[in-house]
Length: 168
Image 1 (cartoon, rainbow, N blue to C red):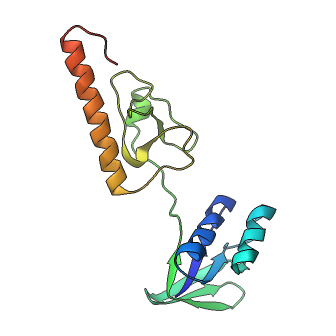
Image 2: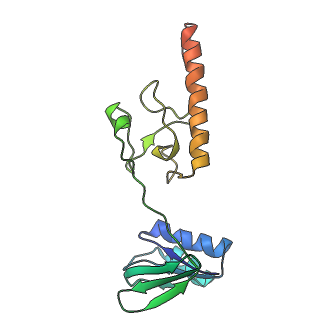
Image 3: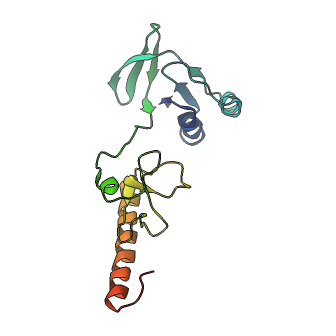
């Protein structure tokens, strides 16, 4: 299967290596303009036979299974599929209004129990992450699991508070 990976920054170029490792031996990295990649990533791309095209992409046409990337320099590239990491950013400002710490990437800082920096306030899903985690995970199933985890801990804290005990 002929695949392309779109990348706007070096960490997204790793997706090309992942796709080449897991799904296809015909992967092309498209950077939509010049992109300085660390030598280590360039070496791995070369080892895997993943070429890079740095020409800006003017448009993508076709349908899944029959796509064509059109580059500003006139080249085209036929692909069966295109992978990319869609940028995500939270648009709700409730956490900030409540005083929760917002990390540099716009996510809400939480601990292992989904608790924010504001007592009694939890956050879940792609709006929240541990500071040590590089990216918010945008999978519905993990967001639901985070919500369940937050609910269990919040309920336990409410129960303890009702007994006059200190929440955990």
